Length: 289
Image 1 (cartoon, one colour):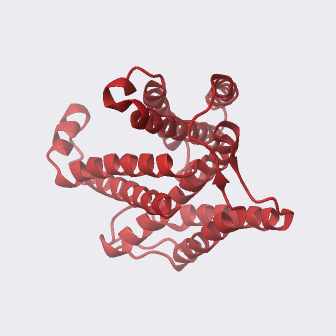
Image 2 (cartoon, helix red, strand yellow):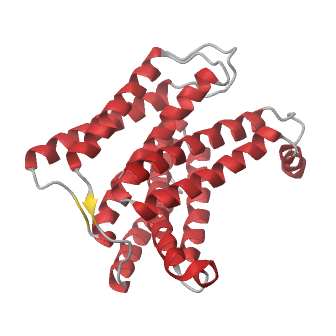
């Protein structure tokens, strides 16, 4: 459990560094540079390249955490990416952050470990049979496709919400493929890993997740899409952890009830943080209250 927590938190921190560095490099580019010129400009920016290093590190750390631990532990811990990003805003770019955002970060830091402690995720295995994979792909794939279809019309808020949920479900699936890929890698080695399907499912889900998430961010407000992307992923991952990998939780109804309340409080903290954290990285601009 200790190894899982350490690597999951390292993945969350790396993801936060990735977001901060690449976003900072992108907004610092001259306004006249677009398309290929912008891409060439970014390739010469150390911050942007550092972001990619952090992104790769985040994926590796997450893969290690998933290999040694439960999906139902790793994915909820990735929520701390938001807290790390908030700290980086204050410490790295010296941006003032509203007290409400810090308060919501504290709520997340208390509610998340409380949820994991009370829920007691345990057991499970690293593989699933073909029938279980097929049922998951049919159900989740169908829901994702339906959400993307429905997200093509309606108000910006509705479209952003539907696409964000679709992206979250895709990322949850990608986590299961990552876990399966690491098991294949550990069993058969690097060369034979590419002879098995999980690595290709991981690549496909990664592409779909990126495209759908960017669409959600593009069509509607960040305050709608970001909380849904962050919160739905661990919920879906918990369902998948029991469905595919036979992970188990506490049998105490009282502990389950309190754990559910803790998760709901954490989700509220994520929502408040998303709406009170500055949308920009310019420390000279006023803080949102």
